[in-house]
Image (cartoon, rainbow, N blue to C red; front, side, top):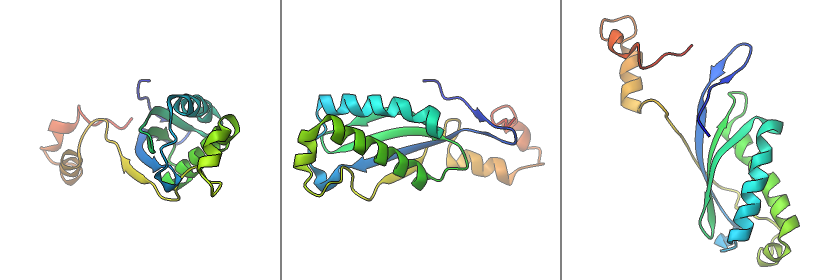
Amino acid sequence: MEDKYITKSHNKSLLLYHFVCPVKYRQKVLTKSVEKTLKKVCEGIGARFEIYIIEVGSDEDHVHFLIQSVPSLSPTKIIRTVKSITAKKIFKHHPEVKKKLWGGKFWTSGYYVNTVGQYSNLETIQKYVQNQGKKYHQIYRGQLELF
């Protein structure tokens, strides 16, 4: 999927997040079959919740998500929604996983999150902001267009 802006009546955004979510107890339950179910469930989340899952990659005991969403949703709200929906569906379609995770939860309560810059890095943006209205600003005008 090509990254695109999300345009609303009063804003335009491109918010990308990289999340890493470990499976409860770091159990190695993410088989090819479970991963296939996980990806299928993620495809349906976007339209309903404005949480667009661009990529999903997993190892045996954790999952990486690349997610785009809207400014009104915090990273915490985004990942709670994704974890809740995916856990329910995985348990439903893979009862063997629920047996391995004796506490009844698929995910740990924690997660890692980082923002993803599509066009630039911290240093470039920092210089761009510092030099608003200065001649130096002209250098960046073509690179960073908000609207």
